[in-house]
Length: 433
Ligand code: UDX
Image (cartoon, rainbow, N blue to C red; front, side):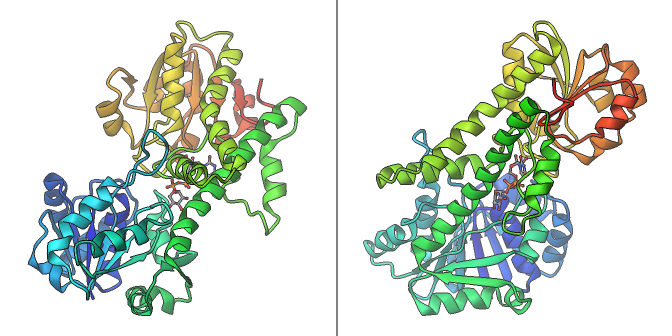
């Protein structure tokens, strides 16, 4: 089937490339001509393990094309996925301007036989709003909702083996077409939730908000563990083994970041306020997570007895391991707060440095974790990159001015490091101050 993706950002690129792997003829349209040129040459603009091979094979099979032009070809496309960004407005509500701009660009080329599928995360009611918007200009194209649940760093796996496919439609024909598009996955017994437009749109927000709630909750329990000398890792294990809860999104850390959780919980809260529904839990999750970086800096300050003129090696800039994405990364907020307290920060990240140097010019960068530690008063782990578990801690012990490790991801081996003579601190465990 001929399918087009509008927006070759994180979601559009992963979904488009993987749809060509499923056997569809895919065209990805993006206005960023440099990005399109790089993709045509087989170069990915994002860091996503395993995706490059699918890009190359899609180009080789001629089932995958990239362009920055909207043209006549769109008239023969069966399905057009909208995968443009919907960033938060100042109010927290989703900014839909990119969605409407894409629809305006498409309008001259589409007809009633075309199905426009909103894959971007949008507030419930958006698809219905777009139907009216198109009808106002006598455009009879159909609209459907098909939110995505890909995680950065495991997007290929999440595409090929999703927990479910959510389809929101107001016409049986649209539902059948979407089931045809996902046929290879449905044949693999992937669950399908077929529902109406606004329910489909809401499933995405509720899913992300609930996952974010789990994270904010376990972080709050980590604070309690520190006061009563309990171990949050064991709490997480003992609680997560309940099949109704699961271990997922139950790892304490410096707070949730990324391009989705912070944005989506705010959008959900804004939606509730618009409809005068008192969603206190969602509001509490937002507040608790916004406070988390400052809580981490207070912990660091307490451990070091002050931050003024301290030199701190910070390992991890990205919002989580497995990605180069810095969006809403708690590490960056922690660094900003440390610098406000007159600490000198030297940062290293395995994948996020290029982006960081673009967006945070005032930060000192090391070429390795070891270099970051040289002469530092403490080593702080902010992102759970597996390579940080394999560092040469004996050498790091000698390079640090004082052998203090503050592990905000509970990533490292506490007993081992304590035996090696480090003053090891973490979160939610007796090793904390
Ligand atoms: C999330 C959703 O998981 C995905 O379904 C949706 O499509 C997009 O948003 P992503 O933002 O890529 O995916 O990352 P995720 O792995 O969910 O982590 C989000 C944040 O929560 C990261 O900052 C991560 O460090 C943090 N996190 C995650 C925790 O602090 N503890 C956990 O146990 C899990």
